[in-house]
Length: 259
Image (tube, rainbow, N blue to C red; front, side, top):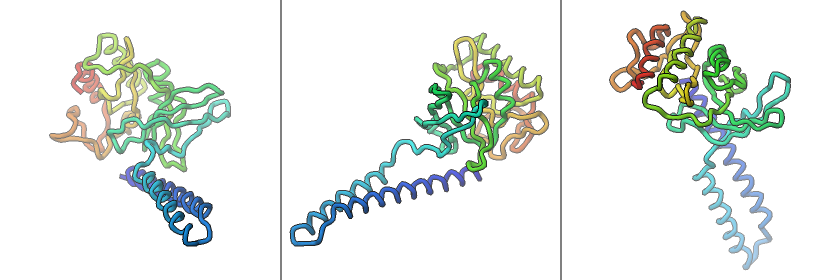
C-alpha cells in the first residue's frame, strides 16, 4: 500500500512539473509574440494565443509514452558512474510493477539492462544464481534513500522464449537453481512460470523480491489467494513463512506447465 501511494504521488508531482514547464513555455512565447494592442494586432495575438494554448492542452491530454524515473546513474565497482537512458516500461499490464528496459553506458560501452524498483529484494539469492548463469548478471542492487525503494539493475535477457512445458534440459537447470538456493538455506517463494525465462537448454530465474533466508523470509500480506487467485502449495498463507517444501512443490508445477 505504501509503494502504491508513493507511486501515485510521484505521478502527480511529475504531471504538475510537466504542466508548469508547458505553461511557462506558453507564456514565454505569448510575451514574445505580443505587440502593443491595436485594431489590427489584437485579433492576430488572440489567434496566436489560442494556437499555443491548444498545443499545451494537446500535450497534457496526450503525454509522452514514457515518463522516465529520475534515477539515472549508479556506481560501479571501479568507482565510475554508469548512466541510464530509459527506453520503455516493461510489464505494462501490472500497474504496481515499476520495471523498465534501459541502456546503461558502462565504461563507454552501451549495455541493455532492466531497471526494477521494488520494496524488497534478495541480492544474495540473485548473485548466487547469476554466478551459475541461472539468473541475469546483476549490475547494481541497493536501497536508495531518495527513491525509498530498492533499485535493481540487471542485464536484459535477449531471445528469452515463451514455453508451455519445460524441456528435460531446462527442467534440470531449474532443479539446479532451486538446489543452489536451498543449500544456502535461501527460499524463493514466488517460483512461477512468469519468473522463469527459457533460454535454449537452460532457464534463468528472475524476480527475487520474496527470496530470503529460511525462517525469516515471509509471503507478502497481500498475495493473491482464494478462488480467483493463485493455487499456492499447502501451508502458504498471507504473511506466513516461506518453506523449502513450497519451492519444491511450485518447481514441479512449473516443470509440468501448471503455474
